[in-house]
Length: 449
Image (cartoon, rainbow, N blue to C red; front, side, top):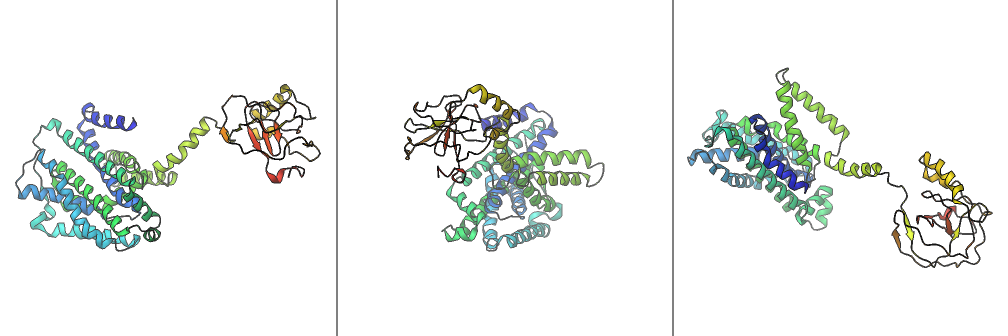
């Protein structure tokens, strides 16, 4: 239901918000989030940090621009149909490059990816007959109305985000994804267990490049211009990596949460503070990221998934003792009192009220029993039949023990309902709420060991 509500709100967003600036930010946010999800398919699941995926982002953009120039394609919806082709071209480039780069290990692989990025950037500057050099290339203008300029790009970016998220979910829950996670944990051991590590890594690398090439082509069409500085931005990979780690690398929702938070924040800081001082927006942006990393070092999604149950438990004041009932009438047990006789509930209730006021349930058991206080259990059987433990109901009364048992233990009371505890050997049992406590063997008196 939450997923359906989020999709419905995303679809209705550009129809409700008419501000072109806001919808433009939304287009870049969805595109950037889709890029982070695609990057996470490889780097998040395998643990190989790639800082050269901007090369495939630029390859996708240049592929669309070259196709429009050489095939004389006019602007319109037709260019959106060419996005899968740009992704295939980016994947084709990623296949030999990944085969070479993935022959190395993690840190060397990171350096090689940076080298690949700068090689593509230099090629874009120098191959002027193909890329236009530093002047760049213009793409055809869309043919729809200027009032609806952002609307098609928004929905295409949303479809790309949903598609890459679906693929990421499939990878995460498939045998292929299990192999990628095994590589991230211990690649040598995964190889020893039969995982085809080279094929798995290369496959994830190509899938990631395919979607990033599609996003690069769509953003290039939206911008209307492409040049080496735009297509091969050195801050692209760093921002994508920070976004993924901010949300939670290796998780399904981590890149989405990071992208939806980071890109609007970066745009807001740029609009508000870039005119005040040059680079001030980057300083504030970096400071916020450092603060978040210090507070949430594992990422937002993993941290919340770990702390949320604990917070819910504290809100509900969940009991620290697990209540289990011993369902049987065959076990002879005895009631606890100070003199071997039943104790009135009023006396124990007064003692329990003081304990509860200090929120210390453990103090309702005041002291350990001694050998002198333990009665002789001569009529009880030394063997106890194996019982099945089931959770006790909150207010359901426990089975009443046999009436002929009169042995007692001094000073032991139920921490929940403040009635005397019955006991058999090392098992203490409350007849009111079903709480079962076991006395450790080292704390048992010598007569019961």
